[in-house]
Image (cartoon, rainbow, N blue to C red):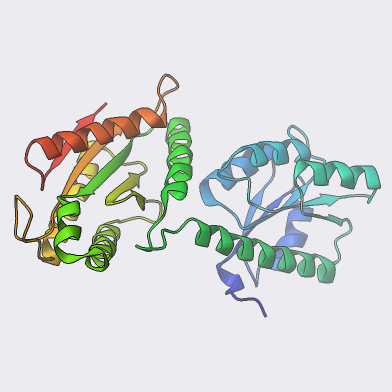
Length: 305
């Protein structure tokens, strides 16, 4: 038995022949959510938008071949970890060697044997989910349970490219716990650690979509990536986070602005373009944070680029 509900997994079938798609759909429709594409371009679009868990990809197709589709998917960080099983007409060592070099995990041959293809798909899905779990553990901050700096850097780059491709706005929030060194000095590091955990979870609860990300990026500093979010949306989330931290009511007798722990937030919003980079957005949010701190803390400053 696999450690997941197979009905929750997405399988993408890519073939230019409807009859082949129907055969595979019939085999898998009871176990997985089955997506279908009849061209390489359509397959790439589906992968970027819906993130299937595994792809059954015909090699010989008009327009983009399966090999070309594989190259595109493996070159994109957003899709490179999706396992690809090539569907081929004849099993030849040179063909399989090329496929493995391109990043395929396996091959199945036509005509399709239902027992064989089901077993191979199930095996590679199990391997993928195990790898996903290991990757997720490596990208979690051990203290707070939110994403770590490495995960933040990866997601910021991915979100930038996605919003650039779709010509839509994205926002970034940088949050800093006010007078945190004084809090540690007054209450001790175990209390400081507990404070950071509560702040992180309070931030996380204010997110509205699975694509939004909260990460601890250093010390008492956190960041929040908001894809497809304009300046108004970023301000709304930042205000909700300010209120959520205040409502925690964590005592802070040495704060210069409040009896309880507060935070300062800087937000930056832009529509990515080729002339800029994600680093520009990060620096702008950081500058907005420092302006919020200079203006008295326990507040937000927002910039639209």
